[in-house]
Image 1 (tube, rainbow, N blue to C red):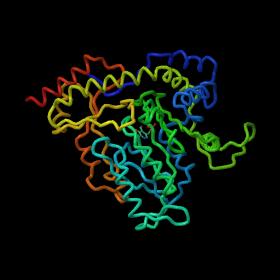
Image 2 (tube, rainbow, N blue to C red; image 1 turned 60 degrees about the vertical axis):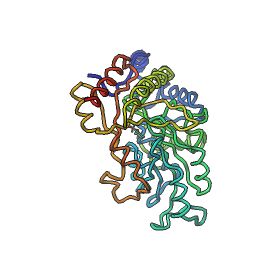
Image 3 (cartoon, rainbow, N blue to C red; image 1 turned 30 degrees about the horizontal axis):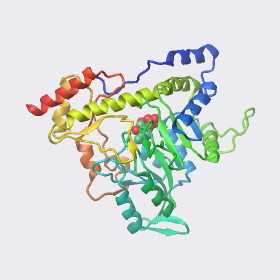
Image 4 (cartoon, helix red, strand yellow; image 1 turned 180 degrees about the vertical axis):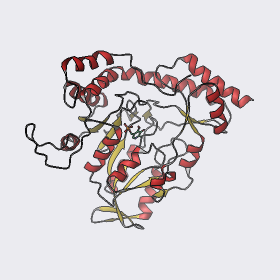
Length: 378
Ligand SMILES: Cc1ncc(COP(=O)(O)O)c(C=O)c1O
């Protein structure tokens, strides 16, 4: 079996986790939490990083800190992992599901500009969706599959319409836009360290920001809003969203290997791209100008996808279809989907994730490629 995406734990993971066990620092505080936060902040060139229990909880707290309230609207991508849209619902707000471009698969900034210009209006300094009369408080662009959204355009729109930008950067740690990482752009950005991400802590996440007040609030809210280290005085509705020391230790070992992981992911992607683009009808993701992608998860668009899936499964090659668009999921069917061409639907229909663990060998990649060639030749 060639697996889709498995963690690469070849570094100091055992050593650092053993250190936690040996010293009893296994829980919510400890030196590895601080170190992990510092290393990620340094790597992304962001002032503050707050470690949390998952990418989903990072999104929840970031949107809360962006001021999203009940009945507000938040604009996000229609083709993403469900956690992005779920986090909006946790706040009893609703998403406006924006379609993506047909080539980069990122939020369509032209469509967004038209929507804001024609279907929204400014009142008392806030942007309102005319039809629903609801306030649009935030913009939550997802950097899909390691490619990055056109942040320049999004920043211009966010300033014009007073929308707070939270970047869902779960998939793009190591990617660059105009030589800068995510969060040097929006107000906050969120990372995920789920098992399939470019680095993993098993489960975990991070909130990135350059704003000290927001960073302190994020730490406070994700650690039970404890106002004192001694007695049990909690001054806000807090959450137990901490990343424990034992997982942060794993994170430190993973960050040490991150540059190598990014390099290997890029090599894998290039190897697939060179061969798969020779097959008629197969399309690959176009990386936006100014972006260096971390090539987190390899996805291409394949005609006759369902039969290709069956074929690859018989060859013991693990593959997954790309996500179902958010507007097709029961929780979101009544939310507004803004689209002209339904690119999300079309890309979802053809998109297939191929094996791309950093530990995959070139021989295994070639086996996947050959198997795909065989399918289209017969
Ligand atoms: C775009 C995106 N957002 C959010 C998440 C949620 O992160 P987590 O699984 O760590 O909660 C993921 C992946 O898991 C993701 O790919």
